Image (cartoon, rainbow, N blue to C red; front, side):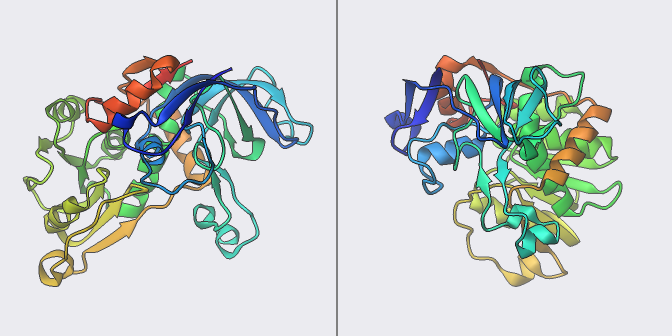
Length: 333
């Protein structure tokens, strides 16, 4: 099968991805084998490829927003999925189920968790495997291309919105407006929020306004009103300060990324006093994923998806790194 692997983590300009011909993976008894149809190109893939995250699997195949068709069901994979089913593979692919965090419903914090496209080969390939317990049923009414970004950009944005604790009808600020933010904006709007976007790209600001946000301005510019909550999607620590300054009393800043550059020194009075708070977001639970995908089934989300053939995965990641993608890029297999 055709696949891409991380040859040596480093900047996209040094060609860290390698195109290979590999054996079709064999599923474990508890796994599904999936013929990949589409795979989203996520900023986390970039962090894995460029070495922002430590290596968990040598020469890993990236990709964790996978939409495909089940072609084989392991003998111990249960009967929830059958050959021919459309299925989604997301970032989280294993938790222990017995630790303190798993038992209390926080499996995203499991110290034994494993992830698609980081600990195990992902969807930048023609076939991928997934434990059946971590595979996802997908809502109808979407194409494969539209569904792919929902499987991480959508899910992590949904959890980030929960972590931000936006009050009903509240004012939400989004810092950065890529794949995850443009989905999250639509979720918040559907819930009655007033959304303001701060982002560097003119095309991204244009897309935000087309989706119905109240305002769109530069990444570090102040929004026109105080914010009840904010989410930082851009992996830029410098934006933490203006985001906190934009919060109203009691507001929460939720940081959505798995990687963030260094945060400058905070001034307690200016950035945190009046019970402002900062909350990180770590992965997601399967309950988050189910809740978001059910929401997407009830409220059709307009996903902007520049398409690339699988053969151009390296170009897609380069375009993402350079900020040339509006929306969420998708590889077609």
